[in-house]
Length: 277
Length: 282
Image 1: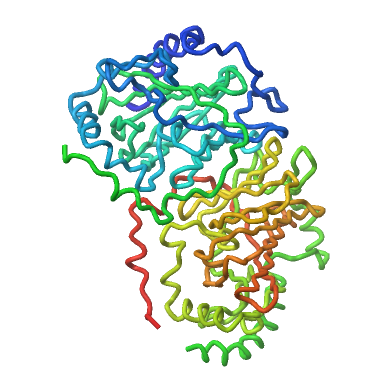
Image 2 (image 1 turned 45 degrees about the horizontal axis):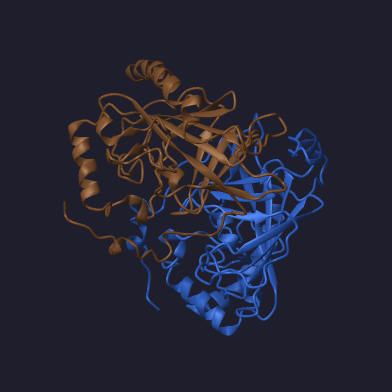
């Protein structure tokens, strides 16, 4: 009951934040999304996030180039060919609780050497969306699911349930992808997720969270070659207020899923070094 | 211990005949034969089809579920020393172990894996379940048929939470593929049977749970059909001149598990099993 009351409040807050953060006009400051081929649609008229019979491809999670949820340093110029959304916050404006900021800084100081992703753990939210080697988004109307297939890292996948209207009863077994339910708002897929484990990092920069994390993600495809990913983060365990961030992903024509497998002779962790912090 | 398997197989073969008759009633009927069976067939749920008319291997809007990989199934019969009868879900056409055309070294590897209680199974080290192994991994697998991208994907829920792609766009098998756990797969339909040809395997997985070995020369032909709503029939022909003297075929039936949904099982998340997998070191 407490949880659902909090969620209700959060949805209202999220909507207010979203109205600002997710406005198309704001996004258009950085990219002219009115150009380009129209996004493909499925037989039922829905936007398709995948390829077409004539064009294989998938979404290449950008590495660097601002494809983060925040601007990592105040001096980063977000207006310079970046994949960041124009509404992203600089790190100074992220409403960290003090311990969360200290942990974020620690991860930065130690050059991210302890990142779970490189130990073959699933990427979690939103790390999934900027993992290299491509991301496939499978829309399965028959089973009422959307499945994200992540090609890099541990070769894993995440399911979003479009039939459910509320989350499974508490306590949810915490997992790296959480319990995700989704619905369509026009041409945007909106995903509400809870039940996250604390053991992943939310993005490549090491944004921390707790098991109280609740996310609302919005995914849209304004034209054939662009995906907009936005997430509102509500975690009263780590942040003092809800906040949003996101980035653009680019369609990579010709990309196909292949057998990348992190846990196959993974030599990276011992090569990841940095100060003790 | 090897001789135990060999010497008991004749006795077990006698049991096969007996149990096959019994099991014909209790396991999936290949076709309705008795009047009662015909009535049951008439009342059976229709097998779902995709908009393009192909058989669907998924659930329906009203019927969530997936295929629960049955433990205990095997590509040949009586592969375990303590087996009294073939697993009831094994295909009736499966070979006896003694009839599998192993090359001598492959039979030795197989016996070594059995003697050591399959303790070295790569699957339990969070490696993907190549070839047939995927089809008897617990916690279910989903079959996604993606018309727009002309792909079929298998999503096994257990083990390392991975996926396998089959290209349905008519491309040929690759000439010189990079070896991987799932290989490179192309598929086509023969009537209502999905036929998948795969090459480009690495040699690091076990073809099935009981430790059937192979080399990177492996070429598989899998035939998957859904004779009833609740039944998936899986059959694989193993053509590997590096490990066998000729191609051979085996498989099993896989029950539909109503209500099963994919969930976040993740082998590599605090995997404690390998240290607990013990057995003789032959």
